[in-house]
Amino acid sequence: MINYIWSAMVVFSLIASFFGGTGSGLSEAIFSSASDAVSLCIRLAGTICLWGGLMEIAEQSGLTNTVCRLISPILRLIFPKMDMKSKAARAISMNVTANLLGLGNAATPLGLEAMKHLQSENPSKEKASADMVKFVVMNSAAFHLIPTTVAALRRDYGSDNPFDIMLPSWISSAAALTVGLTAAVIFIRISEVVKWRK
Image 1: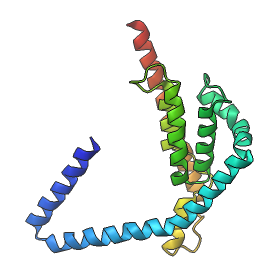
Image 2 (image 1 turned 135 degrees about the vertical axis):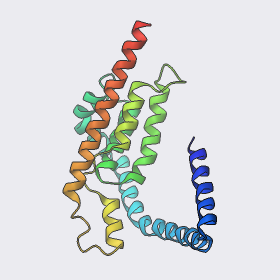
Image 3 (image 1 turned 45 degrees about the horizontal axis):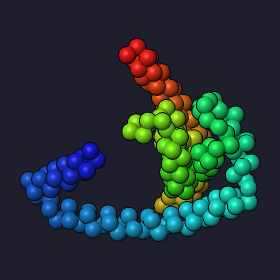
């Protein structure tokens, strides 16, 4: 589906540029955007490598088990049927930790690992389980205790105080996570009721 949306956006841009007489501006925007994207990746590479390395150290030192134990009461509320000693629980714990540090890119491989373990425990392989749905929502609308990536971008673009977005970040991410999980739980319950009635 995303391929169709992307293709439609490209075609619409080309048509609008042709009829608007802004073909040269479009060409310039394409090349400058590509250059900006590469520059952005290079600027973020240092931050991502630092925190990705720290996460690997945490895993090998056993800190992941400690983190899993610390946040297990919260995870039990969200995933009441999950074994908190399972590989899925450990991967989810580290994903949550990475998101708390504002490291979305470091959280992605941990999220994929968690989904792999959740899928292995899923009785219906062709349909996402309730735990998988809740995890996707929790990962997408993650709470950021330290918005590291955003702060790094603000610093690179000349902000005098890149971390002055802390309070708005806490409020917005907490609201997004609360609303997202609430909606997920409601729809999961509705789905279970409909399935039971059938």
